[in-house]
Image 1: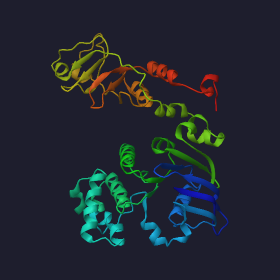
Image 2: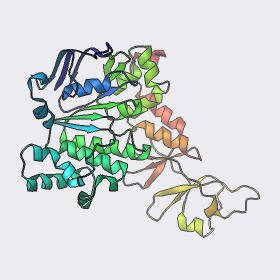
Image 3: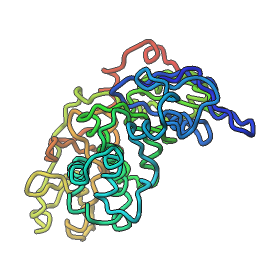
Image 4: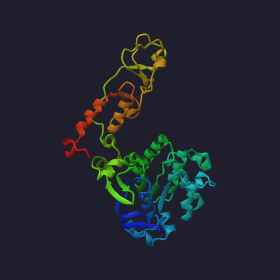
Length: 371
């Protein structure tokens, strides 16, 4: 557990970065600190490993005041991941990951064996271990940064905007990887971000900070979205927070409908002349796109008229994915797939909203609350 007890950080120029913070992070959970730039979230994080010293108050890790622990010793027991990985450019990937175990007295052989295991754990092939950071993509470097933070098996992991410097597709993959790792490793993680979507996706609890280093609300993501504490939180989480809440509603009530389908080879052979939107499938029943109805005078061959199909919705996962699939589809039909990616049917936005109504509970939804 990590505890902040009446913690304040005031810099020499009088600026208050953190103002009387009281907060407890439960062991084995991911807690996200989120807020605008300059709100004190990173300062709060860095007081845990004494990279910043509090002006007043107490920070405890597992009941121990961190001020009573030698900073170097403290940091070797706390994993730390920063933006753009912060790898040593003159060391190979393997030696970067082995850094903390070597500092902790491990033999070089044992430390490098552990590093090789961790590369696989974070989804990197072992052969990358002989490369240097400059030879890796941004996403690969961030995975190495996570592996390095985990190398000495610390119970606590601090992550300061670790995925903000990579593109959205890579970022989503890294978020998924972090959630997979946490399910396996059960660390106590404090994660800093300015992105509310990232916060509600990965956080079991989310702490919202405002300018002046004030903690405004500390809650589970669904509560944060449904019951913001004040106008600042309401504005920060965005006017589309109702859409974000779909991430917490399972899609068990959705029954996909059948739609017209055609095989890729039939489309390529111009053996298809649909009078309705038709989903094109490959030989393994995986969606490849939509073929619109043939209009009068349309002489283009079918293969040239196939449109990208939008996002796919995996059956049984949260409703946000189902609504996105329906809204992004050129046909207005969201494609539903099984876990292995095979076609299972389709769903409309209206059907997603109907399923949402079935899941709604609590007085706010039924009385039309607008907060």
